[in-house]
Amino acid sequence: VNLMVLKQTLVMDSMVKDIAETEGRKYGDVLKDFVQSRTYNCLFDFETGVWREGPAYLEYLFHREADGGEAENVPRNAL
Image (cartoon, rainbow, N blue to C red):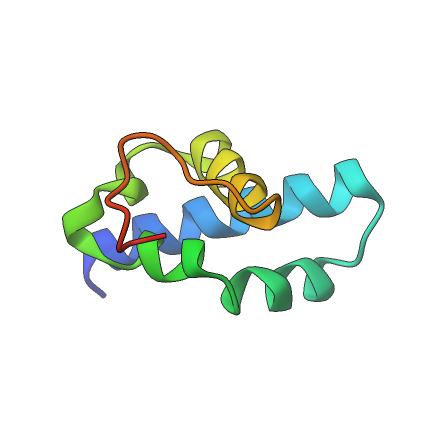
């Protein structure tokens, strides 16, 4: 297994668990929403470097996207 893919998956899992717990949602529902987001694509695009930033930053980007906003330091075409 590629270590970067493992890191990306662990960051995603941690973020999804946190959102599910904080918002009282099912893990699977949060995961489904995330996988369908542009933030998900950004996480698995090595060039954006989002995977290096950790689950809190990933959650920030995901919520920004859900609110219709853009996040700083991420290429406009990534989100």
